[in-house]
Length: 167
Image 1 (spheres, rainbow, N blue to C red):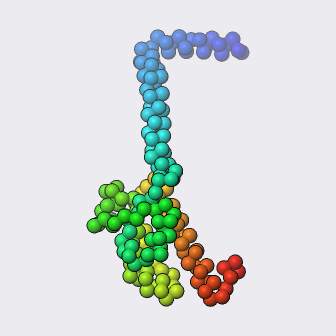
Image 2 (image 1 turned 90 degrees about the horizontal axis):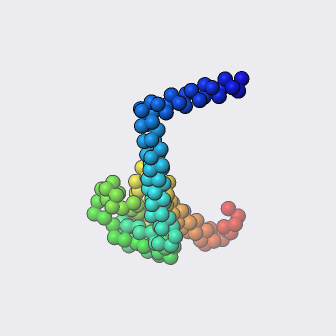
Image 3 (image 1 turned 135 degrees about the vertical axis):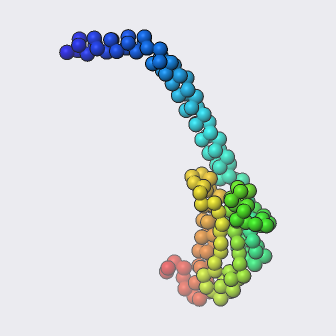
């Protein structure tokens, strides 16, 4: 049985070596395959390196609309390695064109809700089509805003005489 398998295998290999089209395809795939893999890995490594530079200590650049309305929030963000920038003229266009990744908007409704002890709305604009490590700045900013919310909530509970640990 093994002898029959070997005979057919040898015949097919010899036939394939005689066929010029098979040799051309095989030669091209031997050269192009590794080149494509190298190109893909180089591009992926470059993209990941650019995005992880953001995580490795470089401050997040965050344009803020209405920064003067929430000085405590701005101070909290600056303490957590966020560099506050002036807002673009048209935030949606800046995000769509890729000039900005994220823009935070603080509205007057935030101030009135915050002062009355209610949930204060913020608007964090970003390009939702980005994925993976490209979302690092957005996810970090969102996490910081949630942290600030937690700190404010704990302080409000303490002001009312309730221990935050109870919650």
